[in-house]
Length: 498
Image (cartoon, rainbow, N blue to C red; front, side):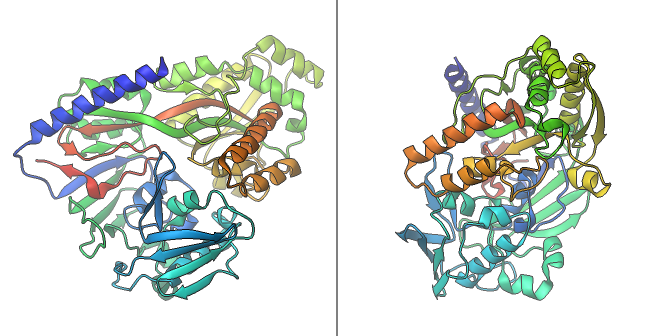
């Protein structure tokens, strides 16, 4: 049934795109594409970025060595060819015709510099941990021989995602990392023109780009946190495209004249997280009780209005080695029994960190009520994680919105080296995650991740409850806007008509 639904959606989308193209035939193009996004960036430094929302802007400014598509096929970008010399050595040949936005030449020095700063930055350190940069060799200006401490099966995914964006060594050293984070120098199809914090980010076409030049000269990202307000901007003509449309706004967009919805599969998921270091939550009975108390299907239906799927595994089925574990059961009677068994017959009070986003707050309020029904009271904090910790709070419960297309990157939140939100401290998981990264054989690697998923499902340090699609709203005057599972839309391929 699901496959039929996806096939039907694809047919509807194809018809919509065809109709839009026909309607725009003969019309003049505009030189500015305006896009509504949900949050401002705190940095334009890709190795210091930890959110898909940051990378979806940065990908138009920076470029990567390779691109890995949704089927796992690796395509050339700044690297033209590559080969493994052995399990620990990857040799890559680089393009010779690339210049950065400041006219500096791109060479292997920039690649090694990017990896080094990625490994040194706490945000990216765990991703680049397998790289052995002391033994990595620059053979010549356009050949680099990358060494690994252990075999690294996820290397191409790492190189093609946000943290793998190549920065200019000369620019960072000249400007300093802080200034670079505000005025980035990349080699992508667009350059940063201006950045008004909290208001807009404007890009202008890079006419010296090595690849196909951007179709539309300017791209302006309008920062509009409220989902409904982003849709209003589309309705009134203030923007041409909207990222991250809320489920309850889908019908509104479909009813608009001159606009349509673009929806597709993604690697996005929502999960509850419990601190692995918290004394209360160290009791497995407590974690299971909290899980049993949540009606996952009712929660998903109430908030996502038919656009999302109730989670039936530890990560989305679009990701390699997904294992169907079934939806974690709802049983409030069992929840009360386990609370009594743990010594809390009357429940307890617990802190719950919720990111200050509309969808997170709606989900959290429903979960709060479900927990209250079994005697668990929640003290809710609506703020980002860094602010929460800066105020001296200890993690207990929280929620995580993930969007990762590689199992080692999804499951990295359980690695002790990651350290954030879950506060992981499980040696067994650390060992298994490290081992799984080293397996190049796909069948053996899938088996390793299946074992990890079984362990995590049983442990209940997290309670996945929703797999969500990517949803965009577009003016019918927009063409070439491709739905991407990771929200990584290449604006250089988009045309907007008058």
